[in-house]
Length: 473
Image (cartoon, rainbow, N blue to C red; front, side):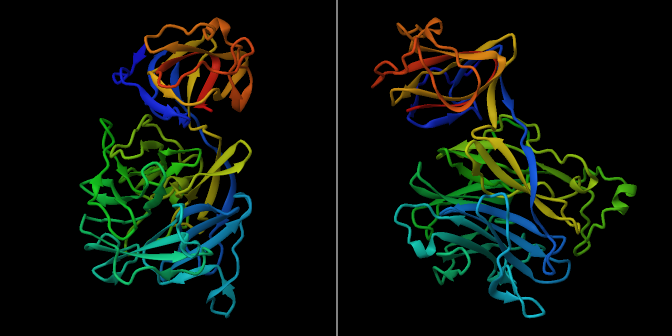
């Protein structure tokens, strides 16, 4: 039986949805375990097949804005300007490059380029209540010593950060003449970073890349996007140090107090591709740098509002490189920032694949809602007991899946671990099936006992089942 050393303190849950991506709610596991689920690869969302695209394209983010999905990515040839490009979708599945009359190609035709010769950049949807509609999509640009950056000199010098805004996600204007932030950390803001308004913290939060001997992350906060806190390095607890090239940290849209991160784990000098495989990849080089001596993959981490520690519940790869030598090279399999809902019970995120190759593309990956991690029980069954929880609501909703011979049962206990009368395991109507939102009942009664001001424990008995999340509603 595994036990959480922090189990004595009651957790204030209220009516929040809680996922089991960490051990925050869990006191004991007996015959059960936390299971990392494997995302399913879906269709290619975007290919680098336009004349201004190049082998060094990179996906940055996907935003869901007023019913429209917006994708921002970098287009970069071996010789040529850095371009910020744009695609959009009504469902997050089928993507189009709109013909924008902002930057034209050599034949004078409209392109999907928003900006040419732009430095490194990041974009986010400003969800702060009261944020002006004409600047609800924000862009931050990074300059070194007042000079525009390219991806090849992004690590040079101190960084100055400038702020821009847009009402339509296409036309951006400066929101401040002076830099809103200056940072002297080594390699600050190199590669992709993430910013967002946190409803849980009532602050703007930023997570950005820097170097401390490892490719690492720091956290900053602001009330107004103009004045920022001093950077605080994010730790990963007691887990081994690794190079995390990007972070893709974002509030999970169904539980915004919980920030999910999809970093790119970078393994320098771990060459997997053979000379024979390399000959067929047509890999490009840039400033003498080769991209076949390293490999990378996506991993899953989480952190909670206000924390300076990422939880690495799993060290295993979340999205492995998979088949094909083209996915075993440097700087591929990098997730875009953004986790979005693309179906009634489906979420999606996106990865850049086959970097530095003419076949570069962005692919969509899917999971069930909340489906990153589950409390998993085998056919033989097992239990999970929570720490004391303070809940607000009258019903308990679960996201779970069972086998045909499996089931889930729930017992409500007092803080001392004694079953509440009428809410023991023997009273619970077994939950069988596959549901993202199903209410628990005890002898046909769905209403929980009066919980105001009380801490309770939940005891789950599972057989051939996965429990993904819970919510008191």
